[in-house]
Amino acid sequence: MTGNRAIDPLRLAESAVEAAVVLGITALPVAWHALDSSLTAILTGMLALLTSSVYALHAVTFDCFRMTGHRSKRSFSLTQSKE
Image (cartoon, rainbow, N blue to C red; front, top):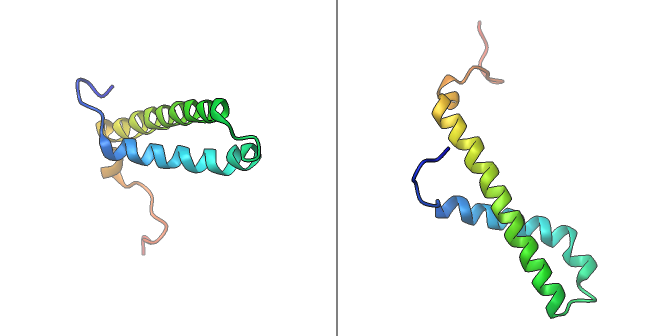
């Protein structure tokens, strides 16, 4: 969907931060007492998997919005009235 464009570093950084927050909130407190090298490798793999998944989801969603012009329509507003 994105053609031949390179990986967007800002989108990748945002995805990595979001994946780290999710992993830090859910898995790290439980695994902290048993943390060793094998568990660290598993958590690193999970971080990479979550980062790539979030990056792909953002890429598909935002590129679809940009290609369809969804942002420019602004068909709804909670603050503007028709009076």
